[in-house]
Image (cartoon, rainbow, N blue to C red; front, top):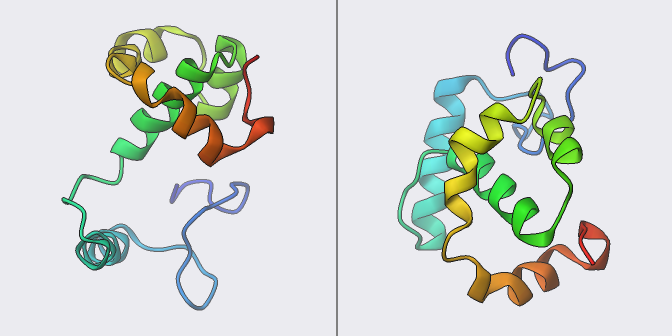
Length: 105
């Protein structure tokens, strides 16, 4: 993120609209988890969840590769594929949360 944030679309920004520095983001993330009453997880786990949700919803692999910024499917298959297990029961809730245009079917 620090290398190319000028060209990236960032989800989380500081109050002044600028990108977080790594330590700032981690502190803000910890506070947000505590305020929401959810167990702390490393922010990077959001990438794993996103890929798992995409795969669960039937988004084709080339689109996921592009969204994640990977060169090919090997990283998705080796790192993220195992996180889909157990999500099938949550498929409907995930689709409702992301909306009809999220993908699949």
